[in-house]
Image (cartoon, rainbow, N blue to C red):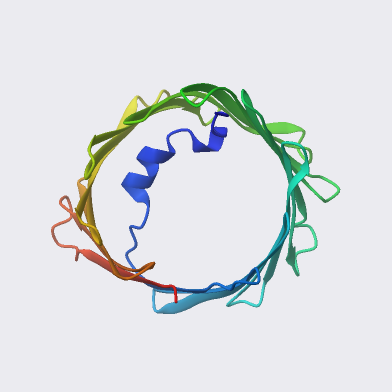
Length: 272
């Protein structure tokens, strides 16, 4: 199998530790359609403000059009063409009214490599490139971003990942070589998984870590927990109360700030 893109290095651990944690009131309504048209409405209440958007997804053949309108009347459009050429996917995205937001993304994959690149459609574009070589078991990769306005690299990272059916691990040198991140994900048994992520900053010799676990309680319920070095403890409970519709409760307690209130959040995802 082809290697995962560089942006997926460490994704299994990252998802277990961060995905679905939400400390606001959030909802998602998805209305699929058999003719290729889908509609999704999302919203979140944060700091007494309601922020939301409505997106429409239309698919015909190998072409997908994603149109999104947010609370501030900004329009986000993305047109994706699968298999524009053998092994190549291309996408054009732009925002209205930001006339400098246009961007073209091109990705290519085969059995031994996955390459992604993007270029801004403006007089001083940002060039972004990432690649991974190897296979589904072990891959080497890197990414770089070049700002033509300042004629300088604003990002370059490199890493390695190992993936097996029951575990995955990644080691990434990031922030222009200033930080080393290591992550590990392990499936203990069919219902339980654990993950850990640690970062070391060379300039300050500072270490940060986060550990967590997930557990399937029954076919429609699951829980997650996490603990970080800054003393924050997070817990999550998710239940599929009807097919493909989820309700998620999240909580976080800061053990080092006993005078502060705990954070709570609920997310509701509806699919007819």
